[in-house]
Amino acid sequence: MSEKKEKKQLSGEKLEFKKIFNYAAIVKNIPFIFYLALLAILYIYNGHYADKLTRKISEGEKNVRELEYEYKTIKSEVIFRSKASELLKVVEPLGLKEVKEPPMVLNDTLQSKP
Image (cartoon, rainbow, N blue to C red; front, top):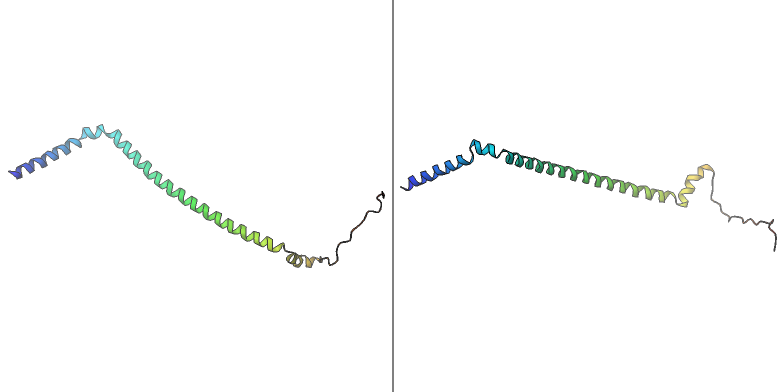
């Protein structure tokens, strides 16, 4: 007897399954199925967009770091070249030399004395 009850339960489950997934039920739920499909597509698009944005941000950060290193290198080079000893080496071929004596002070003798 227990075997017959199990067969009835299985056949009852099959009938319920057929009731749920018949043509009329599927046609009736097409808008909902399209809505779920749209949500799935939007979810996938959002994931791809986030990955792409993350890659762009990391690439931008890398470029900023490289430019920062370049800036620091150029800045240290400018500071090094602006030293008096380095300037003398650069202008020596032009015939310019460092003045050894202090500058002469000129007084205006044309001014009226009080």
